[in-house]
Image (tube, rainbow, N blue to C red; front, top):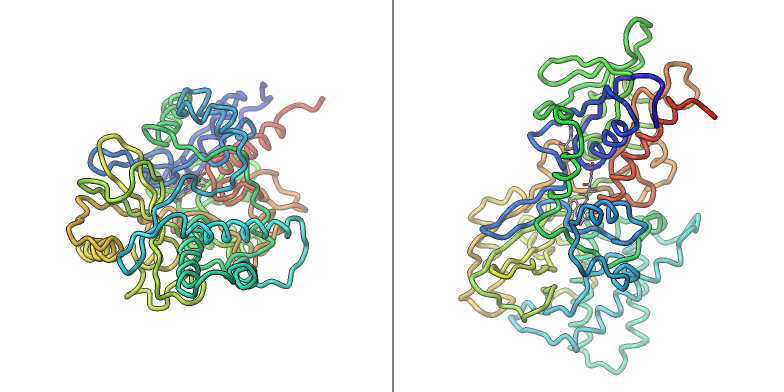
Length: 491
Ligand SMILES: Cc1cc2nc3c(=O)[nH]c(=O)nc-3n(C[C@H](O)[C@H](O)[C@H](O)COP(=O)(O)OP(=O)(O)OC[C@H]3O[C@@H](n4cnc5c(N)ncnc54)[C@H](O)[C@@H]3O)c2cc1C
C-alpha cells in the first residue's frame, strides 16, 4: 500500500506494540518514522535473562493461545521460532485458558509431600468454579462484588454438597489447596486478591485455543527477529520522552512536538504512544501539554495495572518428581479460602504458592510466582533476607534442611521506572467505556484541530487481549492502520 503524503511519526516505546506499529507503517510506505525508547534495549516487558546457564523469562513467558487465530503465533511460527509440539493441530485445538498443564507435586507446610490423587478434588473444584464465571459473559450487571466473592460462595456451596463423604482433615487440606490455586489465579491476573477483580470485566478477556507455549532460547529471540526486519537507525535508545506537546495551532509548525529528557525537541505530525499503563498512571499529568481531556485522564486513573513477579531458584539437584511441570505449596493453617496475607512484611512469602519447573536438560530451576502488594514488597527485601526466606520456606515444605538454592534471581517490575507494575487487570470498577477512552486518539471526538495527533497503543488498550503480548501486538497494528487509512485515498 502506498501512502500519499510523508508525515513524520514518532513512536514512543520499543516494546512489541511500538515495534508492531513502526513495522507496519514502514511496510506501508511511511518514510519518516522513528521510535524513541527510554531504555537501552528493545522488547520492554519481553525480556529474556539467564540464571547461571539457564534461560529465564524476566517478563512474558508464554504465547497464550498459540493457534492460527493468534497473530503472534503466526509471526513466531513463520520465523521458525516455535517448538515442534506447538505446531501440531492437536495442541492448537485445545481450549484451556491459562491453566498450567500436567500433574503437579504438592507439598504442605508441615513438610509432607501430598499425593496428587488426594489433592485432585481441590484442583477440579477450583477449575469448575472458575469455569462457572463464564455464565457472566455479555451480562450487563451482577450483584456479585467480584470474581473472588462469587468463587468463594460457589466453593462453599459445592464443597458442602459434594464433600460430605470426606473426613474433616482431608476437607480442611483440600480447602487449603484451593487457597494455593486461588493465589496462582492472582498471579495470572496480577491481582492483590481475586476480591478486587471485576466479575463482568473478567469475562471481557477472550481466550484463544492452543496449549500455551514458550519460545525455546527466549522470547527476546522474537524481538531480535522483528527488529532485524526494520531499518537500522529506526530506534533511538536511552531517549526517554518527558512531554508530548500536542494541539499546536501554529500552521507553520507540526501539530505535535515531543520533548525528550535530554532536552531534544522532535517535531511530529503524529505520535503513537505505547508506554505501559503503570507509567501513564504515574506520569500522565506531566506527560502531556495541554493536559489530557478529563475523561481520558479519569479512565487512566480508574483502570488497574497490577504486579506479578517471578523468583527463579536454581538447585544442585531436583527435589521434585521427574517430568512434573508444577509444584504447589499448601499452608495447612489457612481456614478460609485465602489469597492474600494480613501482615505483608512478615508473611509476604505465603503468597508464593506455585512454582513452575523450567525445562532444561542440564540445570534444575524453579520459577515461583507472586503477585499483588506481597509481590511489590518482595521486590525491596534485601538480597540476603530474600535468600534466607526462600531457603526456610523450602526446608519447611519439603522437610529437608539440606536443600539450598544455589542461585536466586527475582524480577522487580513494580520498581521499574518505565513500567511501574506488570500488566493491566480488570479490577473492580472496570468499564468498557474506560477502555475506549484510553485507546481514543487525541484530539478526542468533536474537536476541529488536526486529527490523529496522538494515538494510543499498548497491551492495556486491547479490549479483549489485554495483559498479553498478542494483545499488545494487535494494538500496535491497530494504530498503524488508523494512520494508514487516514493517508490512503478513498476508493
Ligand atoms: C512478569 C510478567 C509476565 C508476563 N507474562 C506474560 C505471558 O506469559 N504471556 C503474555 O502474552 N504476556 C505476558 N506478560 C505481558 C506482556 O509482557 C505485555 O503485555 C507486553 O509485552 C506489553 O507490550 P507493550 O508494547 O504494550 O509494552 P512494553 O513492552 O512495556 O513497552 C513499552 C516501552 O515503552 C518504554 N517507555 C516507557 N516510558 C517511556 C518514555 N517516557 N519514553 C520512551 N519510552 C518509554 C518502555 O521502556 C518499554 O520499552 C507478562 C508481563 C510481565 C511483566
